[in-house]
Length: 234
Image (cartoon, rainbow, N blue to C red; front, side):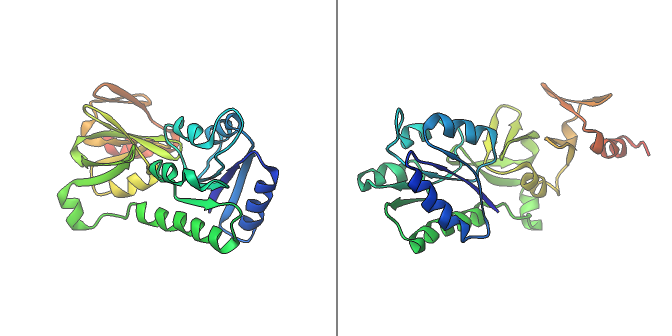
């Protein structure tokens, strides 16, 4: 299921996109915004996978607003002005739909989102990859090469994750559940719905807290039995 919102100051544009999305079973609308302030509140408060974004809006253009987002969802531009297409692709938008657009053209753009999600999804590592102990992760429009042994812990961050290393923190485009699958063959344990820790980096466990170098991680109640197994408590 792809959750989407529409950011456009024209009500008719909302109706057209909603009508097209109603034909697609995997599309779920989470809201409508008619200016940048409404859009900011929406993407902050709700899980949004895809934004249908207009450019010319009052007070702030769609592109100016997009530049304010530290970690933007995927974006399909819907505009009546073709001269902004180049800037759109420089901002890494998925597609640029020129109004008025047909349903087949709309469907082609949405399919790019679906295919991109398949490409970026992290597969479960093979034995050969596990022996290598290295992998690439996408963050901040770059791909970072990370060694498993350098990871202290992973923290859930909405639809993203924060990967804490000894000397830096990387915000990944992957959810913590995907990273848990990737690290399943390493010394990593889910100790909280929002935290995945490297067990060989644990210095102390006290009560419901795990002490790592420079960090304290909470132990979730539903994960307590895992920690007890680590301690040898049955």
